[in-house]
Length: 563
Ligand code: GLY
Image (cartoon, rainbow, N blue to C red):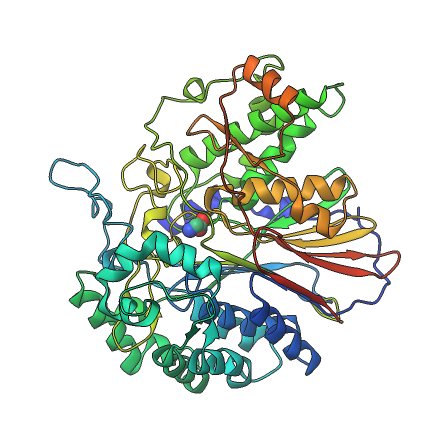
């Protein structure tokens, strides 16, 4: 009954299905990949060259990234895979998001006074949700792939066993999490060298991880979620103060969901649905921008409107959004145009709206942390099959805890729940009841793998970056709409506002001095960030010329390849 009631709240997103704005694409496609690491892009392209399809390559690339970017994603984490199979009328989203252990409860990170226990949702075994990555990849291989799982996992197994040279990003993020890594005997043994950060070029070998990958190659899902490995994972977590059981692993389910789809100025856009807030927040912001389409605005006013739309959509994220399998979320209303017109109606073109006025003020930690965690890859194959996937273990090196004897570094996605309504998480994001912790519930995410398709061009886009993911993808879509090419889109300096903290963050070069002065005069608090953010991986296909281009964000070390 409860489930039925919840479904009634979740209006079918079929209402937003596409209505023919896109011309039939008669051009041929080429294989293209873009990811955050050259070894993953090369492995994915090899699979495509050997006759695998985009979904096969998606499995291989995710597993190689798990080995070579231990700070971003992995077997101990989860993610969202947006898939479009040529010939199918609809894209789908494979939800491999972590979920709370069955023994989890809403106050599990609070002390007897009701205060959040510092670090408990961030560091160590208690911070880890039940991983979904392996279940999702096996699901994709079985339902959409064409090559055997063992073949798809081979590149990752080889790199885990033989090693790969660590780079500056590895060193920087390890430094950021060194104290936490030190607490886990296994993590210390694997990722540090004599307790220190290894030099650039050090060959990092992960033999335990290679053995775990071999178990998956041999037994599929059961190699991870059942039998000896599941026992080791559950026992290892419990020995370290966590609450996993073997039942948690056995009962983990991948969910195939209908993504959020909407139209915007001739573009058909598809993005992640709940438990990711990405698609809904993107649609909300873009619908609000449309309310100003016919008004003549200065360049600074356009930025002001963009900021105000971000503020309002992120406020809704905080108040209304959570796992729609557990709470009622009126998605159809949130992404509707009439709701956007209400939301935008109090945007004053001359003054910023203080976030505190949108809702009761809630506390803000105010410091947005590192954003090099999480990873993204984009793929298209010569048949036109497409994948946009964003994966995560949450914070750099996740919880910092490796389960003994498995090589599996666990996530700390439990921090993406609202630990107590109004208390911000590591990204400064606040949340409410909808995203409270509950047994078996998925935590709210910002990961936003996205497809954008217009008359002339098709784009596959996504990026890591915590709470900033959504606004980065948004600015990528706006840049595509303005006609920019792939390299220009991923390079463009970015701004960000997320309701709370009430501050406009911007990369160097994103705002001119005059624009900064004008925005400040209208009440915005601006903060230029020391470091650039994001690591966008993008593919752009031009339908008229049949040309495919791909680009990896210059802020990272990613590699894109077009065959
Ligand atoms: N852990 C980051 C996210 O899912 O948004």
